[in-house]
Image 1: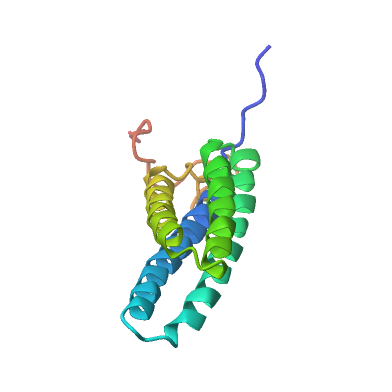
Image 2: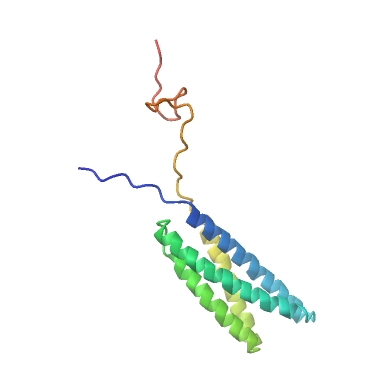
Length: 159
C-alpha cells in the first residue's frame, strides 16, 4: 500500500520572504544614508531617520510572520523565522538606543543590523523556489494525450 502523493509546496511564502527581505535591506541602507546626512550637519534628516527606524521595525515584524508562513505553509526551513525574530528585537533595541542618544552603541549596532538584513536578503534569494504545479495541457484530450509529445516523454510514431 503506497501513501498518496504529496502536493508541491506553495511558492508564495518564499516570494513574500524575498519581498520583505528586500524591503528590509532597502530600508536599512536608506537608514545609513540618513544617519550619515544627520552626522554631516543636515539636522532635518533626523526626523526621517526616526521614521525610517519605525518603518524598519514594522517590516521586520512582518517578516517574522512571513518566516512562520515559510515554515508552516511553504514547508521551508526554520531559519527565516528565527533570524526575523532577532532582527525585530534588534530593531526595537536600536530605536531605544537612538532615543536615549547612545550614539556610539547606536552606530555599532546599526552596522550589525544592516549586516544582518543583508545576510537575510542573500539567504532569501539563494533558496530555490519550489517547483510549481504543471500547467494544464490545453491540447490534451480527455485521456490526457496531447498533439505533441512532452519533453522527455515517450514518443509514439504512427505507421
